[in-house]
Image 1 (cartoon, rainbow, N blue to C red):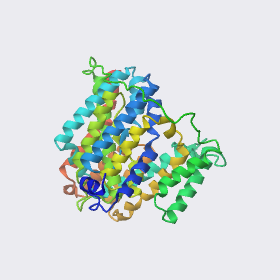
Image 2: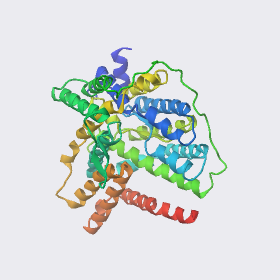
Image 3: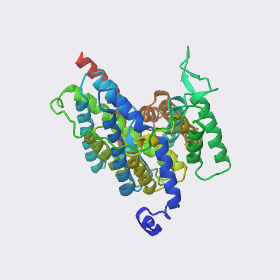
Image 4: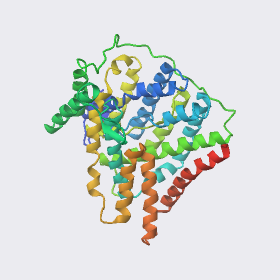
Length: 442
C-alpha cells in the first residue's frame, strides 16, 4: 500500500507521525501486552474452560476490538480481555459462587450489549467528559504508577515481592528473572538516554536474548501452531433474572466502565490528545470499540475486553493514530499461528518497559494545581489509590468522591458538574450494593 493510502485513512501528517513510527509503536504495544495470550487462558482454565479455546478467543477478541479502535476511532489504543475482571470471572463467579463459565459469559455478553446502548446514547462519553481536568491529569499519573508496579511486582520480573512482616519487599536480584529485568532496565534506559529510535522495542528484544543463557527465556521446539477452535456462543440464559446475576453484571459494568474511562484519559493525556477543555476527540468511537470487543469476546468465549494501559508503550514510541492499533491487531492475528514464538518473550523482558512507561506517564503531575487543596487532595488520592489497590476504578472512585466532598465543604459545590454528582452516587451504590447483596444471599 502507498503512503497516500495511509495518509488518507489515518491522517498521519495531521497527527505529526509517519508510517514507520506507527508500525514500531503498534509492535511495541503488542510486545508489552502479549502476556495476556498466556495469562488469560491460564486464569479462565482454572474455572474449567479450555486453555486452547480461551487462547484463540483472547487473540481473536483482541484483534477485532483493536481493529475497530484503529479503523473506526483512529486512535492508537489496543484492547484485550482485561486483567482483574478475568480473575473475578474465574475465582468469584465460577469457583466462589459456584456458577458455570457459561453463566459468567452470559453476564459478560449482556454487559457488552448494555455498553453498546450506553455508547450510542452518549452516556459513556458524557461520563468521560465530566471528570475534572486535574483529576484527568492525576489519572494519567496513577496509571503510570500502576504500570510501573505491574512491571516490578508481577509482570515476570519479581523484583518486588510479598514481604515477611511487611507488605512488600525487594527480592533476591542476583539471579534469575529479577537480574534479567534489571539488566533490561539498564539497556533500555541507556537506549533512551542516547535517544535511539525504538528504544523500548529494542530493549525487549535485547533482554529476551540475554535471558536465553540465563535460563529465563525458554526457546520453543516449534514456532508454528494451528489455532484451536474458540468456545462459541456458550451462554446460559435460565438464571439471568436472579439477584446473583444482577450483582455479577453490575460488577462487570462498573469496573469495566471506569477502567476504560481511566485508561483512555490517562494514555490520551500522555499523548497530548485532549482538547483545550480536557475532552478526548472521537471518544464515542473509542468507547464503541470497547463495547464491541466485550460483546464479541463473550461470543468467542472470554471475559470482558477493555482498553489496555500498555497502549502507553506504543504512545511512548510515537504512536498517535489508528495505524498503530491496526498493526497491534495484525500481530494478535499472527499470534494465532505462531503462539510458541510469541510465548518466548519472558515477562522479565517486558517488565523494564512497563517500569519506564510509569516514568513517562508521570509528566502531567507538574500541571496539577497543588496549591488548591480541593483539587490537590482528590488528585493525590486518585493516583496513590490505583497502584495500592491494583485498580484504576478505585482510584477514580476515591478521587471523584473526595473532589465533591471537599468542593462542598469549601462552599464551591457549584464548580462540580451535575453529571459528576451522579457519578459519585454510582460509586456510593457500588460500595453499598455488594453489602446489600451479601445480606440478601445470607
